[in-house]
Length: 489
Image (cartoon, rainbow, N blue to C red):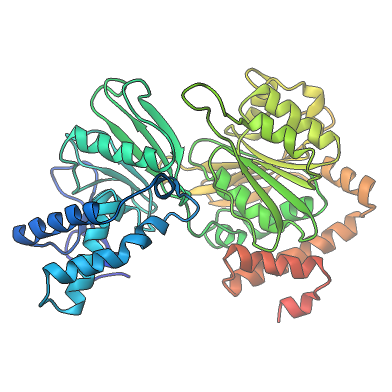
């Protein structure tokens, strides 16, 4: 919800956090080199603060927690829900003559103070934020805004001890410890959000917390086309390759949107296949009706036992009869070897890797630490490179390339930064030869297929069908014999 902007304000809007209405104002001020993210929630008097603290103490003594309660992770709100009725009774007890609206506000405030991370928790409800970062207790909390980039906030933790307490609380919820012997923590919350924390003296200036928000609504191909990240013809060509089970590698630098792009490509999968995804952090979201098995790695415990790495999951996935395998990111040689072996044994593979262009992707794959023999590369049919303009922050598909029989990249389409559009550089030879060899498709049939797919993609944009399930449903209709005229009506 947008609110009226004041003079000098760059942006302003509202959102709801735990039944609390929160107003955000982003403003550039003279004493700061970056804009300020001002979080404004309804405040309470010092007396009310004392009563709220009394309610919190009563709550602790009233309800006992067992180990099963603390370990509950399947539903991140299950624990809070169990206390909900008790909190309501305590609020009414201490504020007997208060109206219903104020009671609701106080109830939400007590729940936030008891189970959340204070104002850090409130920030996690802002859908415009990607990251929330605590660098130390001496400076304000930072946030990464989708539109405005890094911003300072008007929020600051009271002490280093509070930062340590918040990080430890998060760790306990996910079965991880954070202490002087284990000063680093990287974990996934049950909500899908990712948390990283470090303790002094490892982080010299103070205890840190970095929260990366899980996208409640993942990007779809509709969003990518609508925002100009990719054009319709390039999207149709990639769709054609995916339809006929060619393997695709998505590369790019940090924060270029590799995983988001990979997620968007997953809606091109037909509904009659088995898909297995392997990630360190759960980020991918596929249409609900697909036969999809998401798998996540696990770090070892303090004794070094119980760890499950990506290689183990990758090897295991080959025994599950998958049609398509998704890998969050290729980092090591053995993982890449198994991945390419999967391609050679008839599986379609989709993964991400850090590299800034198609040529650099080949270099990264064939040199340490990945070091794949160059002769294996032609099994990978396509490389799609994502980029982020470091001046404007805009993300775009930079290159679409095929890999030749000589294991060299041939760039078919490339983004022109000055014109802000993708241009065709050359016609496909390797991908076209592969399609013709294994499907019998001709050049004229390929052009017809691409034209058909472009019409469907334009229709998705026109109708603003931009959810994973919505786009996936259209693709399922396409694969199962749904008439094009019906889809475009």
